[in-house]
Amino acid sequence: MAANVDVDSMGVKAMKELIRSAGLSHADCCEKADLRNRSREALARLAEAKARRPAPAPGAPETATFGKWPTIVKYANGATRDAHDLVVAMLHGVNAPPDDLVPLCDPMGQLVGGTRCVFAFPSAGPQWWDLDPNRWATAAAAGEGALASLIREPPAGFDACRADGLAFVAALRETFPQGALVLGGFSQGAMTATDLALSLPKSVPLAGILHISGAPLVVEKWARDLAERRHHILISHGEADPTLPFVVSTWTRELFNGAGAAVEYHKHPGGHGVGDEATLRAIGAWLKRAAARA
Image (cartoon, rainbow, N blue to C red; front, side, top):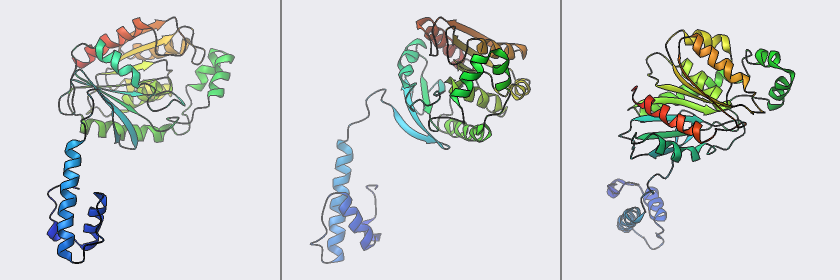
């Protein structure tokens, strides 16, 4: 409650709630004047407690909700809500915890040099849309034909996720309106972020797409969307990925290259992960260039 509350205009019930919230008692307040005096004591105690509250540690994460998606927010290189050069939204993979990608913030922040970055890590639960890992594993084992068929099907919940994602982006940019915007993610999060990026209205500037260990989806729609504006995308994928076979990254590259997008493509020897140190350095350099496109 604000310290400038007008106690004289408060009702008895509100004053009693205020007094209790400050850890005080109103049992001995027989008259309304007594309640007013005790309420003023409560306000003073609450203001003193607020003043003693330690400030968040530099770089400590915050939590916020943008649209429907609870989000962890971290700042790097002196970025603040009011002063930032780059906003990077990173969507986690299937069945990963909301903070799964948060550890990337510190190395990425260092790799972009002095670029003031806001990193946003949203979550919509274990999955962004209905993904059956067993079905994808079966398709991968069956060969490229089965995978190529699967990526043409709109997954259940995909349209609803897209609508929620667009609301997330709008709310995120309302809070962080400055600088360049990058949408990215890992695995299912990469597919979701790429779909959101391609679905954005032209009026929403976008500096790039970060597609890590993902796959193309609803490829006919993506092809149509790619014709609407030129995109910048960084694609990275592990050559030994047992979850989403490496070949799917080449399909994403071909789809974007065919539309005239600015494609940066990185493969690494690992499996289904973010990548090695060289990959992180490449991502950092690409993000720094993305910030310059604002």
